[in-house]
Length: 403
Image 1 (spheres, rainbow, N blue to C red):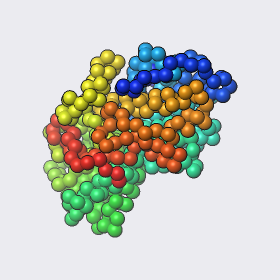
Image 2: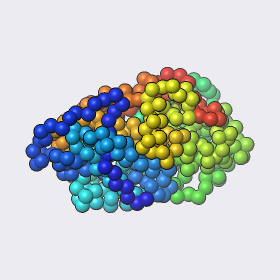
Image 3: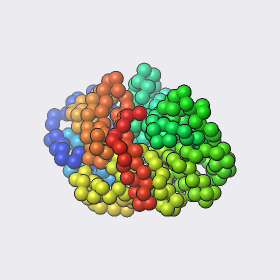
């Protein structure tokens, strides 16, 4: 699928969207905004090495479809252009240019990927186009001083790395740690967070590290080398395809680290765990800020039941075991609240102002986790919980933490 186009409307659970009102003069609004429509776009990897994330864009599109059926946001329908960049940075730049210059979108929403967003960010900011709620946790996307039109959404990779470091220092302070990281800014961010969290013990505790490229056919040699280092704790950070390859290979070479941690970016049971064999992932640890759909504790949770009902009606072909569908659903709710707060002022300036004035407890966020922004806080989510895979799903242990 190279292009998805959806017209949709999004209403937060329990919220009522404002009725149509007198709209601001068209000249004051962003391009793509009329009395009846808000046009916006994104880039998403529907193909390529990160294609398992493509379901995020589909979930968002289907959520907006629901919102449009309910009448839109403040009387305007949402028109969403989602273009396939294949997780290729040059392609992301090309398509971002197309969305802004040719399609005339008002803003960008939830473009996915660290290397892809890094490539397009300067162009987007030079044109003062809101680049809202990027689907990446790279710390660099909270740099308001240099890129004031770009804001992330999920907890940063450095925050997550700190949480893992704190856990290791508590659970296994004598651990010998091996790390396999994706060779890009996301992997480096995770590694920095881990090392910073370990502090002065990082140099002695981390005994080996290796990298991989998203174009690599295998990571077998890296796993064998890391096992041979004598490490008894292992941290993988990367995309789901390589997480599954890693989990399988670690098991197959009979490496049984006492702590096996994978990044939350690869924690989808459907795409990061099940392809390896769920029995091979039992005991693996990650973090969560969303309610995982494989965790049976949420069965009677009202927020979870609302998500299931939405999946059944608006995205029945989507995988209920894939947390990425929770991600897209919750990300879309964040945008709809931002647009609702804009009222009739849909200028690009006001879009950014409202994106930086959020305080939301959304139905599929973990207890204690909120979307919260301000003019001085460009990181909307900052809390996570540790979770462990029990052979069926991710089971939380401990309270929400900030790294």
